[in-house]
Amino acid sequence: MVEVLISVLVFSIGVLGIAALQLKAKQSGYEAVQRTIASSLAAELLERMRLNSSGTALVNYVPNSGTQTFNSSSSPATAPDCSSGCDPSQVAALDLRNFWDALNGASETRDGNQTGGLFDPTACISGPNDGSPGTYTVTIAWRGQADLTNANASTCGNGRYDSASANGYRRILSITTWIGP
Image (cartoon, rainbow, N blue to C red; front, side):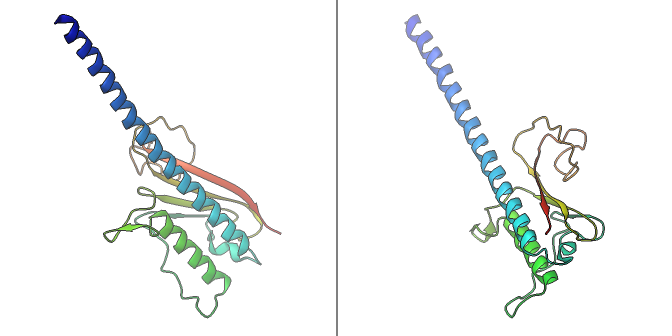
């Protein structure tokens, strides 16, 4: 009888370990999907900027301050209607609106709620102030599920997801590229 109780105890501990492993695997898979979405959308925006880089059109993506930040309290303006053609500034406005909508999951909905994007995203776009050729960076921050040590020096989304000194829940993805002739 004692042997049976001990074997049941050992078996129970093993099953609890497997359950904890499953939970961690599911959480890691979710974090990987979030990073994949961020990477894809940042690369797509940089390609759209590259396509709309004639003259000083890039200044529409990065205004005179050299940095543009979007989050839930400061999203891009509504997209213009480009059915009969757009000038470069309208194309930039359309690109930024579509980028922001994709970050928030507009491509997938369930019961009218957007479900395909990142959790509470912040997007930061930086480059030369005058829209000239140069180095442009798209940084995306979002809230992760678990508290991790985050020593990233980027200020995008700093303090938005937990204390500014810890930033343990903040996830960052940053892509930098040269855009020019």
